[in-house]
Image (tube, rainbow, N blue to C red; front, side):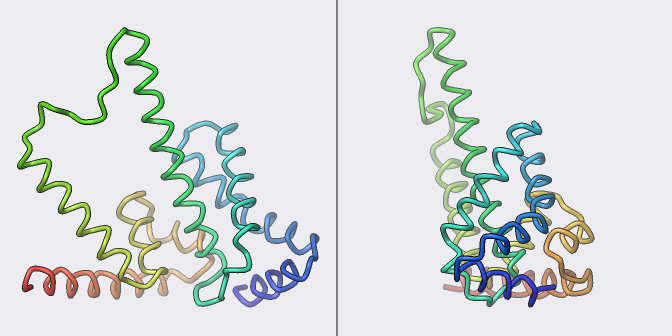
Length: 186
């Protein structure tokens, strides 16, 4: 399965548009499902699928085959979904506040500065650690813990066996624990 995708990618890079159609048909339902999880609207999810495949096509030359193509594509989709979701949420909040004649504030000034600093530092540390582990571990950890997907769902989305997903989760947790311990020991 993974080799089939790699062959299709090579064909696409050489200009074979039919190969791109095959990639889209093979992976579009997984990307659509992710879009529904984020946007809860089929029309937005369909637009999201188009955006993901356009972005993937533009970045196809950067695919090196170190991770399964499905995982690479899912990472593009996940990052795009997170960006769109946060943009949409921020925009809706701004519009709602403006409708009521309130000034839009980007910071919560009533929050305790020490708590905010601590939360910000923790988020930065988690992001840093997640970026230091291998991409496939990063993707699976985000899917499982942040998106609340079951391991079997992740297996289906990424097109890898359930045992491989379990192994990746175990190794990712181990790597994260090592990095946290090293960070706290520093």
